[in-house]
Image 1: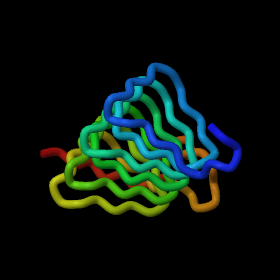
Image 2: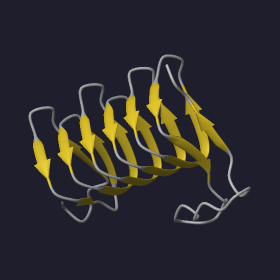
Image 3: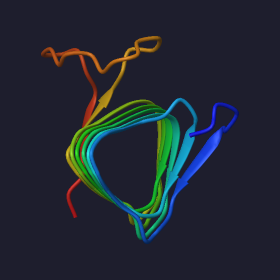
Length: 127
């Protein structure tokens, strides 16, 4: 990635096996088998991510199998998530499917806090 680039796109015809780390924003329409760490993630409807996601902000519309940690998280109605979700701010469209636990993060922390009894808000959605 060029040093002056602020946005990277992984096209629908691309499959990546391995972890991705980006200081810029990332748009994923393809398939990723590995963990993703980036500033901002936008996932297309046909995209599949198998691995953990860590981002300041994430807008998910495809399939994710793995944990998600984001300060600002938007889960669109086409999203299918299997894994735990750690967030500061959360928006979920009606119709989204999430099979996992939601835990509100402590504001200002960069990593998801360790779960302690009585220390987290949990929402479990089952369809």
